[in-house]
Length: 107
Length: 121
Image 1 (cartoon, helix red, strand yellow):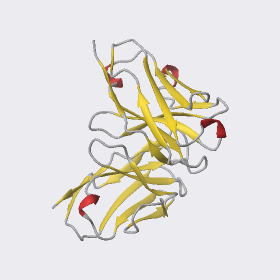
Image 2 (tube, rainbow over the protein chains, first blue to last red; image 1 turned 90 degrees about the vertical axis):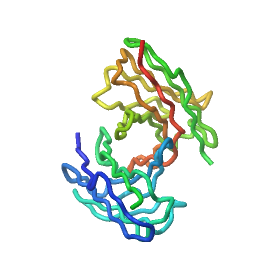
Image 3 (cartoon, chains in turn blue, orange; image 1 turned 120 degrees about the vertical axis):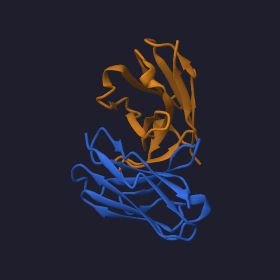
Image 4 (spheres, rainbow over the protein chains, first blue to last red; image 1 turned 90 degrees about the horizontal axis):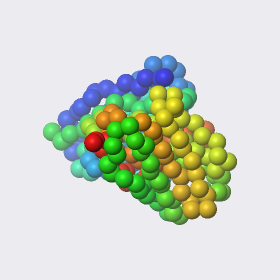
């Protein structure tokens, strides 16, 4: 199985900050990398697919980058509603696997 | 707008079979346009992909669960289902059904709200 490792595991930031979360795959996954946001008690919500494509309806302050083994999710200017947990997911090969999550908290 | 809704018992006894159904509205399973999947999340933990089903009946399961998992589809009811046999406390989790938005990129673009299944006697 491909292991996905996110860093940091948790992050404190303020409204208006620029934040970057990193996801590393245990082997090359080309651009088969997706990002989700999850709020407490809710299902995950797709933000970015294929490493860099913004899902319809997702604010443009979210962006994705990277290829191969190293990927990033950047939020350009944090809004109050962005405080949540973020997960990466590889879709290069089965079984599809997720990172352990990055919890973004208000400073 | 596609909507998914999980249903099934919230409490299952150890060694029994967990059975969940996902009802899809706003889209037809028989169209063959999408794959449909199950994902679970242990309390306070990360997400675990369980497997997917296609309208043709083809399925693929996570090898870590494969011997215990059955995923099927009933296009007449616009539903797909998950059965997990011989459950233990380790199978306690929130179970989500979701749509695979693209068969190549295999991202999950629509999700059900999730249903908590507790394994306990």
